Image 1 (cartoon, rainbow, N blue to C red):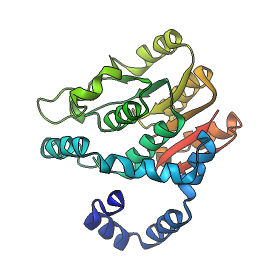
Image 2: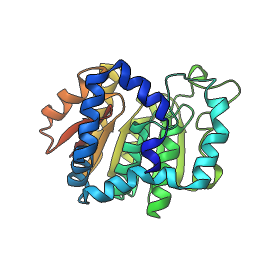
Image 3: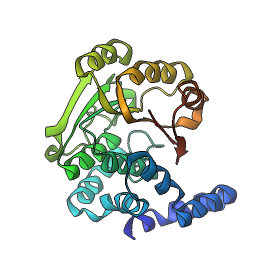
Image 4: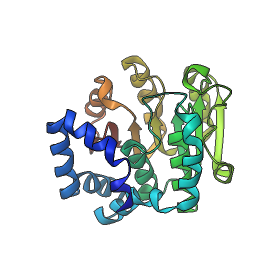
Length: 243
């Protein structure tokens, strides 16, 4: 499987530094634990989810575009990853749920946005609304928010520039019910709880709420318990709960 061997050197180095974590991750891979959770949450099968996790690395046009963007991308956020498992988790969730309306906060260069839009395009349905503050500190020099998203994936995309607190309430009221909400803006406890609370009433029944870097604080876990989510998990740093 091509996706499994992507960034082999980096993954081996990480495993050497964190052997216990690497062992647990390998066990989850072998038992399809992450795939089983996503399958149960979206009404699909684990083997389908495994295929979705592999899919972006089997699409030559998308891969070529990312490789072309990589040199400029590396001048921006050094900790971000064009090929990280967390963006694959988001991609697989979108492919499996088949949403019509997705809302995300936080775009920066647009890595996650590109994967989400690719999933919508593969589904042949759905629209992504992204809220981005447009801070150049999170971008390479002379690049606009979302610059990584290729032109051929932008038809399903609506970008809203501004602070989340100012833009998101009105956007959600305008959209009504949404199928999936993805937090990927400022990962503070206060910001995450604010966004979760704002998004929850607008999520349809059996919708999904995702939170990038959910382990940075306790906001995701507390929220899942507070709303008595039918199912919640943190997969490769991405918090996922059903509503």
